[in-house]
Image (tube, rainbow, N blue to C red; front, side, top):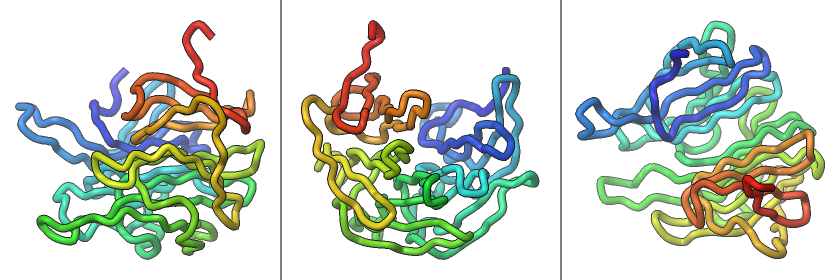
Length: 258
């Protein structure tokens, strides 16, 4: 089965309107292996086949999520040139490809995290990292929270979790909160192991008793509706290929023999 060429730091989401997975952007090694090439292609596929569905301006470390309409929403990312300004555009995927639905809202950023709150029918965005202020400039690790609803972004706070990037977020349907885990507060240092929840109004830190996944950079976190548990996999940090479950009270590592 042919499909998207291999890549890293792409974004993916499930398009409820078409019943297919969507992959967009990312980066790949050049043919001679001497540099990274940033991609702008996007693909839609299922178990049978993949189809190329259109292009966006090349970028990686962007965010994608299914929104309240059941379609895929794409925000931000780091452009191919790596220099500022980083994109602030928001796109929605329709039957004719990508349509830009907003150009204002959160400041341009990469490695942010988004989750769809199905109880309140809104997309929640938190944190990320900004473009450098110059060739040797500093970057800001953000702690702002934004909501996408009714086809627009609105800022709802700058309190709660410390600023970070490369964290994971997912909506816990049983608890009706967005869960946030780990990430980093600076490049190559300041690892974070905290966990927070967003109840639609405010953030509160979640106590973690017993073993935890530890620090993770860009892990994958999803909600298993059938079993009512949040599942975390991989990420750079304590380990790269382990799996953990959160049952609302504690973390448990899941081994193949389990």
